[in-house]
Length: 163
Image 1: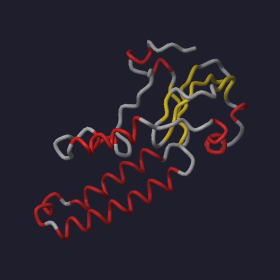
Image 2: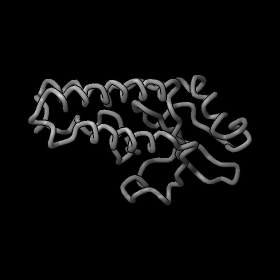
Image 3: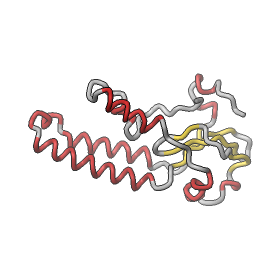
Image 4: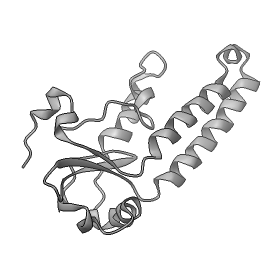
């Protein structure tokens, strides 16, 4: 895959923590971000229109229907602006905000239970950790439209084919 976003989202962070979770848990976490099917572009168009404030044809000369990558929160598509600039556009998956908020509520309840029932965890302040994680995750999902020109990508990503 040519474009791989470098920040953890969702369960990407715990998926790499073998020191905290056993191998069977790590395998399950890996499934959460390595086996995400792409959403058809037609299902993403309402979100794209909302983010753009209009039709994609008003902004893009070309917009590839086939995504470059799909992840749990969003997927990315190659496009070309009307001025000819090549961009990569990240579009939030339909309904993901509601899913994230439900997951965060569950995590908050679990953290409260852990903090009150497991004295050994109290110094780690599980509720504070969950609140900080929630704040970080909410910041990451509040973008409107995220497009990156190829020249702004790290050199290893610039070698990716553009057609």
